[in-house]
Length: 430
Picture: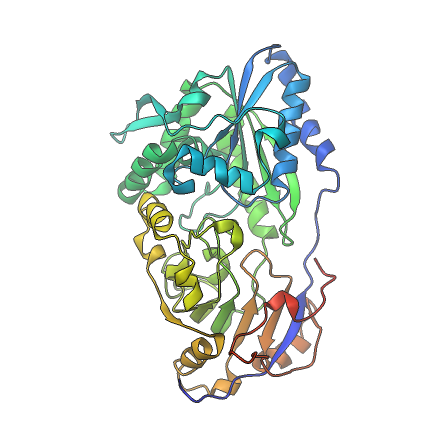
């Protein structure tokens, strides 16, 4: 292990604006009511409601409110997993993903109809079949529910949201695989619009419910849209999401230390919009921020259940990340998404001390005690973080930052591991 002197750290809080909706159970039906759906949904009609694999804030509460709304109209709602190949690409695995979010037939009060079977609803102009979930295709109506946010890989006016759910989510494993291959040839914007328009014109899409979250990873905006509004309104919701999303406080870092990655944090395990690696896996593109030399990952979230997609963005990790990886699920995710490097493995070391020592020995001419290091829980929780002493003077001059502690040494235990960053100081900032 290289003999290096570790930097001291101090804790800061970013002064984000909270936009949390206090009463979601009222906000969801209010949004849906604006669409006058009572005039279109008849008692007894079936309504398929999409349920994806992302770690959406207040997910079970929102889904339950959507189900209740249609039950009160006299309809027969049910949920369909709409998550492409996630959950290991099996119906049972996708049920399991939803259960881990607290979404079950018992908690929702309606059936969950999971299948990997699809129907072909047409052939895209680009020369491939358009697939659609079999159970959703059989329903009288389909309601699309998803968070609108910047995609971790694709850039455009439409990224991750309702339109993407129409193809990647409802296309199941087979469709998602085809669409990602088509994106490699034609680009995401063209494919999401081409397939989305076909699904909207040929399938019984009743409406969509777009969700936008704030910097505290809380539901901040709920908006119901009619099918002919999806394509025009979603870019505006995306701009809202970009303006509200959390970011790292500094644009340059030698090392970003991340406690955990996981599918519940981001579709790519680590949100590339936060780490500045949306275009290249191991460095920022020209003009992209932040610019981070090395990423070190300490663990996986419990809710990711071994899917370590995104580990390929890191240069270093603890060995327990490798031991905890479900390689089958991770590889299926990477292959279906057409992003093989996201599953490739970094250098691993048994302890945090060894991992950081090797990372610090490879930051260039900067002495390790003067290293610019940021330490976060994950890329969704950025309101409080630890920073190395090299940032202290800049932090003092920033009105958007609050310094919470004095500089102190990294607290390795007897084995050589650090505590989780959220355990280091009490938090009342969200």
